[in-house]
Amino acid sequence: AFDVLVVGGGPAGAAAAIYAARKGIRTGVAAERFGGQVLDTLAIENFISVKHTEGPQLATALEQHVREYEVDIMNLQRATALKPAGADGLVEIVLENGASLKSRTVVVSTGARWRQMNVPGEEQYRNKGVAYCPHCDGPLFKGKRVAVVGGGNSGVEAAIDLAGIVTHVTLLEFDDKLRADEVLQKKLRSLANVTIITSALTQEVLGDGQKVNGLVYQDRIGGDAHRVELEGIFVQIGLLPNTEWLKDSVALSPRGEVIIDDRGQTSIPGVFAAGDCTTVPYKQIIIAMGAGSTAALSAFDHLIRTSVP
Ligand code: FAD
Image 1: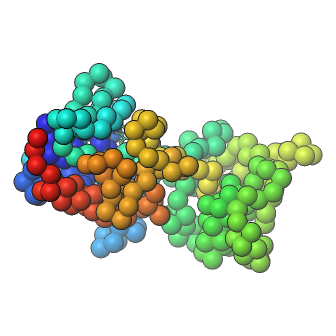
Image 2 (image 1 turned 60 degrees about the vertical axis):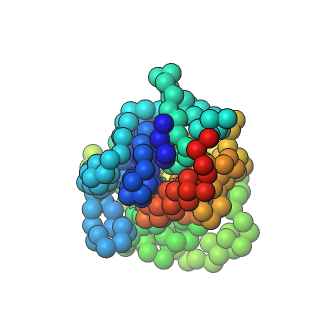
Image 3 (image 1 turned 120 degrees about the horizontal axis):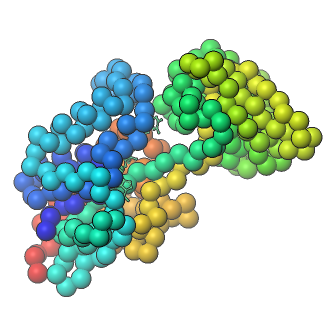
């Protein structure tokens, strides 16, 4: 059995594994895809002290750093259930292949995924104008025109944020009204370079083969299609935590995020969590790494206070 078993191999999981292994305790990482969302990212310019890197490069560096330590990396392993510790004091992680891993503590760091529009062009122009994270990619569109798809809190926050950077923002909402908090809507409406379009069904992302140059939406009331000329599209229709496998065991928020306290403790003794799969505010690489470190240190603290049965 492990002392610390990390489930998930993104920035949070890599940080947790390194912090645990540096305590000289038996550490394992089981991950479906080591590197996580970083693998899907191109330019990264807000990883403090590194002015510019690319996702795949950072993912390789994460893995190399973890491999500096005695960590059992189990890649391509998908967890399907977590069973709280019984009399043996071991938490069990059931894998899709039927095997089980046991550990005195577990750090859950299974991350999240952005909900996609699933329209033609979205996949082709991902990272070539189609973006999901305004904190990450907003500055890349300085002086350009963008759309934000989604009129909930995250979409309206993104539109307000981007309006300060880009020349023009078109906010498209499917419903006949915005769903964001009133105070955010008021702020948005006060901005001169924002156009709000409701009852708009995004139908297609257009591009020149290299990058995005437009978007087509259908007016759900009139039925006609409209084209917006732009250089960027921020999709803000939801960030889904990868926690479906925990719904019968660990307390989750209404959005499905693992509820943690400021030490990364979940509702289950010996089970900690970190990164985008949790209730942590703001989902970013550097935040996930800090949270992974916190969770591993908390797991270590738990171990030294718990005797082996
Ligand atoms: P993730 O990176 O999501 O990693 C989750 C890990 O868990 C993966 O290894 C995954 O395979 C694994 N996993 C999931 N489910 C299971 C399961 N059931 N069993 C086993 N393993 C599982 N942030 C920035 O700070 N700067 C940026 O410039 C930036 N750009 C981004 C661009 C894009 C296109 C995207 C998608 C995200 C970007 N982000 C950026 C956000 C950043 O990538 C995330 O905040 C960060 O990766 C979260 O780390 P994490 O370890 O919590 O989760």
